[in-house]
Image (cartoon, rainbow, N blue to C red):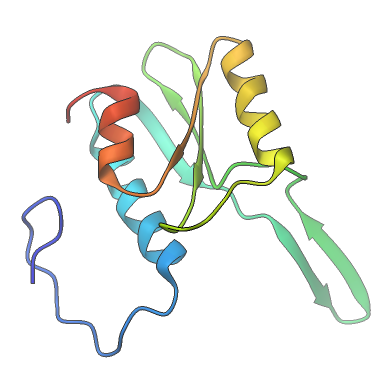
Length: 120
């Protein structure tokens, strides 16, 4: 089996019941290989109970991936499964990034990264 980069990948042991996780892995791989991207990292968000404390990570609308382009602009990418829809807070945050001169977009796979940033 090969991925979109033409690299060999092991056969999955089960069907992917987490399509957003697969999309996130592909999008991160594309961003990290893209010549315009200085860095890109997964931004964990959500909440967890640790002991008897409830801890919230990130903030409402925080994109799945934050990074920086080589020209210094902020990069924010919300990754969605093929049928996933962004929340109003996610859309507003991406608009905020673009309004400040950064690059913010929704990506479902490698093609969306290429469409937003240009060829690898």
